[in-house]
Image 1 (tube, one colour):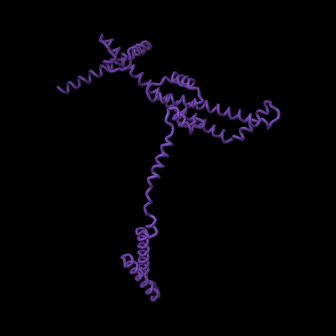
Image 2 (image 1 turned 180 degrees about the vertical axis):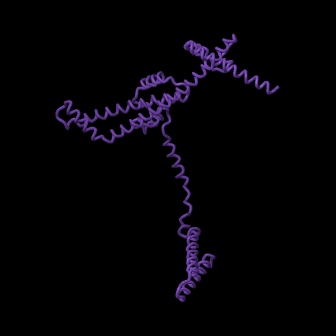
Image 3 (image 1 turned 90 degrees about the vertical axis):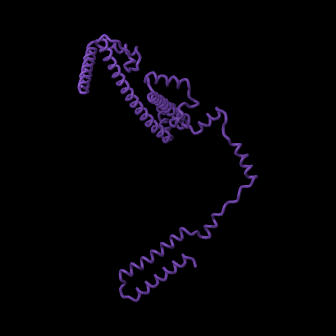
Length: 302
């Protein structure tokens, strides 16, 4: 007998002995109850573990390896694979990439084959002229704004096209072709194509929300950049006015400023006289503070 059979037989004998003792005793003691429950639990646990670990003949037979593929079948598979390699030319790959494009309102495709590429380019240049992006992130947000606006305009065109289709499709339902009947046809079209119009409105809300978020982020970036540039120009003006007050030469690059000389001169030309005096006083105060700190450090070192 196997070890598993011996354990099960011993557990079965212990369980029968406990049941026999329970029949003889008028009241089953708690210890006997606990022993019976323990023996029963161990028996169930052993059977469960054995069922999980030891495979049955049926399950062992189901894991037999499959028959190897014949050489003729392998050759046929290779020949079939060569016939389905997909498009190879750039034009063919471009067409296949648009297979899943339906309305062009979502996804990466912005300019559809039916769109005017020159018109889109002019549309993008108009956004760049308005937003005047500086840096990669501002350029990306400007592109996002232009693409989102392009999709919103396409969405409006799709709505008009669907109403036009309804006037052609349901014109026979109404006898007279006047303004009232046209409104009735539009109402009927909106009812028949309710799902499509609801999807249009949902996409419009999403696109408009994306436009608002992109615009807000772009404005925040540009505001921070302009504030930083303004602070740098004022620092340069302080250094320049201080050097001029002391009859000393001044160079932007040597003082750590990266903007061009023309930009700096334009900034100086736009400064009111009172603001120049404020910047000079601020520069003199900073210079006096630096001198006092240097003298203190020199005395401490001495």
